[in-house]
Each structure stands twice: as C-alpha cells, then as structure tokens.
Amino acid sequence: MKTLENYIKVVDLIPNADQDADLDGSENPVDMQAGGGFDTVLALVSVGAITGTPDTVEVSFVEGDEADLSDATEIAGGAAVEVAEDTSYTFQLERSKRYVGAVLTFTGGTTPTAIVSAVGVLTNWARPFPLR
Image (cartoon, rainbow, N blue to C red; front, top):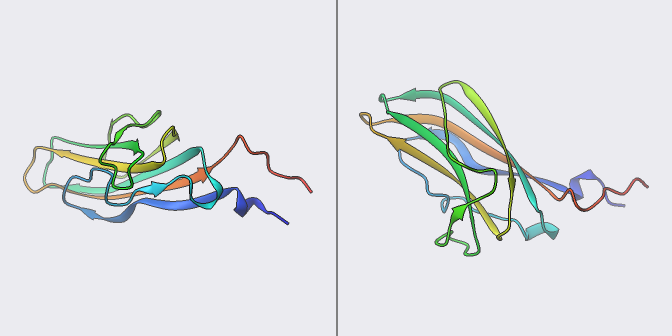
C-alpha cells in the first residue's frame, strides 16, 4: 500500500549553517527525477543572524539539466528575494529541468555572514494520492 510518504520528499537545499560565501546552487543540487519524479518544490528559507553589514543578502533558485548546474537558469517562482534577519520565506517552484538548487548572494559589506537554511518539500501534485 502506498502512503503519503511515497508522494512527497523533504530535502536540504541549503543545510542550516552560518554561510560566509555566495552559493551558486551547485553545492547541493536536488535530482527531481529521483524517487519517482517530482514536478514541484515548496521551499522554506529561514534566515537567522546576519553579520558583517552586507548591503544585501539574496536567495533565489535555479534549475538545469546538468547535475552540477553548470547550465543553471532561474526557475519559475524562484526569482531573487532580498532577505532580512530573523525572517522566513516560502517559494513555490515549478521545474522544467531535472536539477534544482538554491542560490545565496551577498553584496558588499565587511566579511558578511548569515545563518541560512533552505528546506524543500518535493511533490507531484499532478499524481493523485490514492484514497484506498
């Protein structure tokens, strides 16, 4: 019998850590075809303390057909958002390519750091959940 866990999967897009450098998405790409194939990612980004007075800290999401995301392009629903300290953000990402990754960008400041975590819930809403 299939249960709800067969239709969703939780993944780390940015592991919870004190980030001190830009991430381009290739550090932790997610294979959307693994485990039966998923078409949507519901992403929750949590930001803790931001130090080093950066001008901006932005989070966005990319997708590509290469596992290292060397062909990365912005994913639908994943446009860059300037994030603030002690705030959470949600994104609904709809992929058209195989791999998805999170991007973190620091602009300016003196040795900027931010505690950031991005978790994705992979789903396939086009596949109905069996009620039996």
